[in-house]
Image 1 (cartoon, helix red, strand yellow):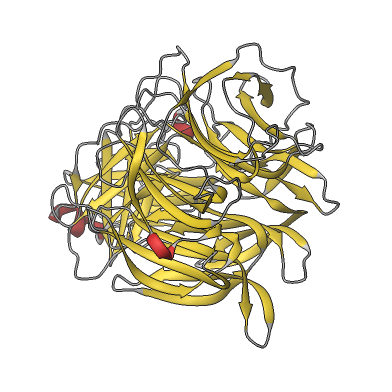
Image 2 (cartoon, rainbow, N blue to C red; image 1 turned 120 degrees about the vertical axis):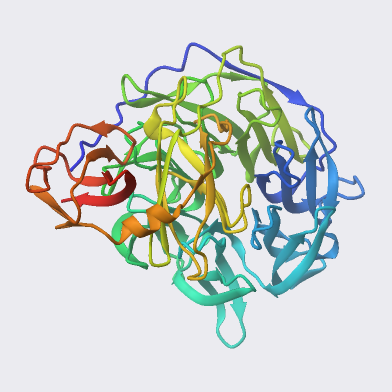
Amino acid sequence: MKKIYILLSMLPVGIVAQTFTEVQTSMNNYYYAASDIGDIDNDGSQDIVVNGAIDSDGDGNVDTTYNGIYKNNGSTFIPYADLGADATHLGDIKFIDYNNDGLADIISTGLSYMDIVNYKHYRFRNTGTGFVKEADLKGKIYGSLEVFDFNHDGLQDYALNGTQYVDGVGFVNKLDYYQNTGSGFHVTPGWMEGTQNSSFKMVDLNNDHLLDMVILGYDGNSTPIFKVYLNMAGTLTLTQTLPPLASGKLEFADFNADGFQDIVVSAQDANYEGYLGVLMNDGTGHLTPQKINVPEISDSSVSVGDLNNDGYYDFIVSGNDGNNDAVVKVFTYNPGNQNFTENTTTGLYNLGGPGFVHLLDYNNDHQLDVLLSGFDWADPAMPSLTKIFKNVSSETNVKPAPPTNLNVTRTGNRFNFSWTGASDDKTPVNALRYEIKVGTTPGAQNLAKYVVTTPSWFLDLDPTIQNVYWSVRSIDASKVYSDVSTENTLGTQNISLENQFSIYPNPATEKVFIKGDKVSDIEMYSIDGRKLNVTVNSDQSINISHLPKGVYLIKLKIKQQETTKKLIIK
């Protein structure tokens, strides 16, 4: 088992202040809002979608539900489109390319001032010039949406969590799964235990390429929960019950760059006391909570990214303190001490909850900026504001290098992708994320395009697909993307070689054997891309007794052909 790094007590406030300046935009000021970041027109700049309510007549009272899409022109954000009468607030909104056409579509949920009884859930298709409604469904409030590919078919699925009213039953909290079939969505109501005033994330916690779930909030009995479900061959199985939390948000990042995703959470405990903490992952998906001792933050939102450009993930949290005053705090990770320091910031507004905070590089200067929305409790009128703040740090951050060694093999309809060679000037290789793009023709992305947290992945594609063209981009902790790697394809030699050999036993503990033709060369890599020192014995065996438990990639060369297999050491 991996060593667990215990967070030490809080250090004094950081010496180097983070400085921000407000960017003037044409965005509305939103109440009870949620938002998402994405590139709606593939111009390489991050755009914004917001669902919430606004004060349409300026009398100081919120009166209209309004959902807006704002385009990034390189220096500010300007209105691009809105969702008209199909707007929601008190819910969530996300970008999703559900038809793999390369354009970011939208899903949303919540209620509207025009109909406060019937909660709504919508899907909007991006036409390239605007958005058109394609689905009008029953929705939820006080919940959240997450987009992911649960069954590895390359199509983006999503889940909807929160509370809804059911005739004859009353209010129920359910988490519903919407599986993308390519021609629509198959809905599994009550897929998992649902919560309200909630947050959940789908993330590969143990690097087995299967998406796990972390969830918090109030269950159907109004009892707070905080649970971890690991994915066991496609079934989410409860593996850890953590101290209960609700009314908060969580995010994931590999803070200590050990190759495994950790969790940061800001919420309230069972006694309605504020809780801010980081849960460190031991590599098996088991999380160890480490509370950060700061004054209470409630109605909070949190976002992760490298704010001080040292290469390590930090986080920002917004909300209300114990006196119901708005607070915005930045915590930076210290790799030497393996703890977090509250950092001084200048230029940010203190905007409290309910609201949201996002870290994004809106002007592509490789510095993370801040999108912030919430109540200005210091103003007697108590307005809710929505603002962008530019990071004016002088630190230099070079974009990462893309992977250089791409490999794909196919067994039946499963395509196994792996890559090495990515690097960054500051972010450790273990902490890099990757955008994988897969298509049926050169340069296409009609099969899959999304971000993963490991340097390997698999897709279970339609059996009629015999070959793919694919590429990868590296992403550093400041959310800076590399150039696209050289495109790779599955050649006929790879297809034939896949069926000519096997490795056994798998999983293994001491030694593995290669069954098939004589191996002319072998390379073995850890899951984080490190090349390991191994040799093939005369009996075609490999001694692995000196290697720790985990997932590895074995690259074999046989008769001038190469292919890769995954090996699990237990």
